[in-house]
Amino acid sequence: MLQMKKALIAITVATMASSFNALAADGTINITGEVTSQTCTVEGNTSGTTAKTVTLPRVSTASLATVGQTAGRTAFTLALTECTGTTAQVHFEPGPSIDAATGNLRNQTTGGSNVQVQLLNASYAPINLQTNEGSLSTAITDKAANLQFYAQYIAATEAATAGQITSNVQFSMDYN
Image 1: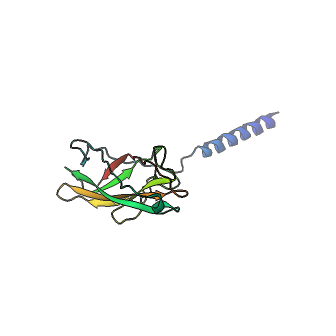
Image 2 (image 1 turned 45 degrees about the vertical axis):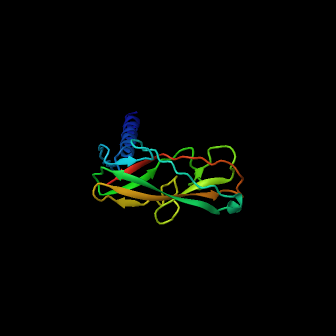
Image 3 (image 1 turned 90 degrees about the vertical axis):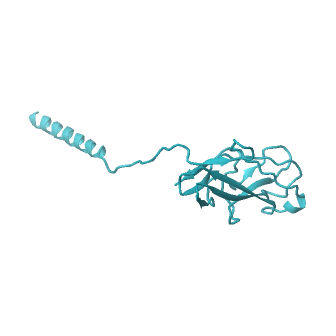
């Protein structure tokens, strides 16, 4: 009986010791960050707003007849003033207007089917709005910067059909 109690105690101690090993720390996660006040002012189309409206030209469905065809490339600039950093970069916020498969903007109105809006950076490379791949940083000089972009229609899944095209994307500015 005494032997059985000793064996039971030994098994209990061994089980507890192995449980403690399972709870041992294997690493550390260090988190750093910084919260600052707004470091730049984004100038919109209307003084005092940050909203930017880009009007694409009217194009024919023939110019968007096959998947991947683009038309109506239009330049626009996001102007920054009163900046305190050295570089600025646009971060596009994921949302329902972005097609996760293409990274382009979906048409938010009825009509104009199979058409999306694609944004390009200053080097004319497409920006994937879902992942922000292709978004370039720009130097801030004399407390200001201009970020150059282009918007264009793109035939999404098949030939485009006629109709109105509207979409939007939220963005935030990253500063260093």
